[in-house]
Each structure stands twice: as C-alpha cells, then as structure tokens.
Amino acid sequence: MLAFEGLLEYMERDGLRFRVEDHDNVQVIVALFVLDSGTVELRVMYDGTEGIVIFAVTGLPLLRPRPDHEGDVARLLLYLNRASLLGAFSLDADGDVAYDVTLPLEGTELPYGVYRRIVASVLETVDRALPSIAAVGAGQVAVEEAMREAMAPRDTEGAAALPGGSESGLDLGPITQAEVADFHRALRSGPVPPPAEDRCP
Image (cartoon, rainbow, N blue to C red; front, side, top):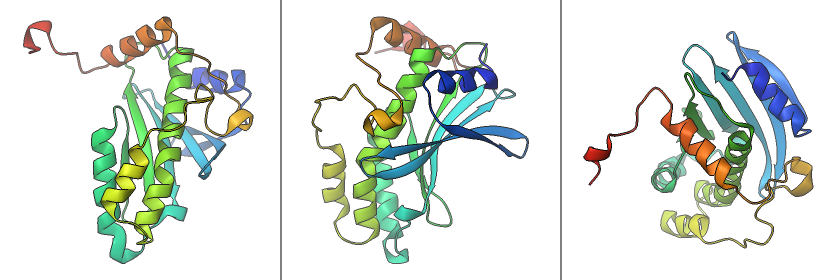
C-alpha cells in the first residue's frame, strides 16, 4: 500500500528538487515547476487516515483577480471544471486560484506510471488555463473568449514531455496500455465503488 515514503521515492526517482513541509501534522511535498505560463508550486499531500492523495497547485497570487472581476473568474473556473475529467479549480476567500486532483487510494496502490501521468496532467491543465484566468481577472477578455482560448487544441509536437521541457525533470514518453490499466484500477479501487454494469444505460 502506498505511503508517504513511496511518494518521496517517486520524486527522487525522477530527479526532482523538492522540499517537505509539515502542516498540522500533515506532511506535504513541494516541488517547483517552470511552465510556459509561469513558475508554480506543486504540492503533494498523502492522508493515510482517509486513504487519499492530493496533487495541488495552490495559492496563485499572480492570478488574484481585481475585486470587480472575481465573479467572472468564478464563472470561468466553473466552465473549466465542467470540462475537466479529474481535477477542479477553486477560488478562495482571498481571491487566490488553485487547482487540485484528489485520488482515493484506500487499500490500493498508486503505480509509478500513474503518479507521473497525474503530475503531468495537473501541470498541463494549469499551464493551459493560467493565461485565460489572468486575462479574465484583469478584465482584458470576456469569459466566453477566455474559455475558447483555454480549450483550444494545442500543438502536440513534443506533447509527451511535461510542460517546462527538460527542466521539469520528467520525460514521460508514450502512454502504455499497462499505464491505462493501472490508472483505471487506481480510480475504481477507491472507497466509492464503481456503478454496477446493469445500471449503465
């Protein structure tokens, strides 16, 4: 079963530079990533009591919207969340934007390949959305235009590598069928069971 030490081992295996912080007796791994849209901190938290792992990019003050545009940013984040398969954006009381993915892992493993894909997915999602969120927060573009920009197809050349290039420390290569199977197993083995086959339309 996955433990905090396993997450540390995964990051060390990838050669990532990180630090460990303690927040209310919860240990958090913090790694810095340089994306095309800016530098962000990825926080990885493991809660053994609840059996969950949280991958989060939190507290992005560079995206703090002007007070008169917080409503527009909240609406954009709602649209982005509706289009997201895994994670969700949020806007806290201070106006900071965050994005996180929570995986239920009680009684199961988080394979190394799945961990790497989730990290890449979190950073890619944030990298795509940052410019649009910042533009809406500054009152430079309308929500609908920002949404179209954030969801526009991107150049797939070199897309197998994590945003930030070699500095990110991860070169993922093509997705394998084994990784897909591991990912589905990790999602379906959490505390919430998948729906029975006879419930599917």
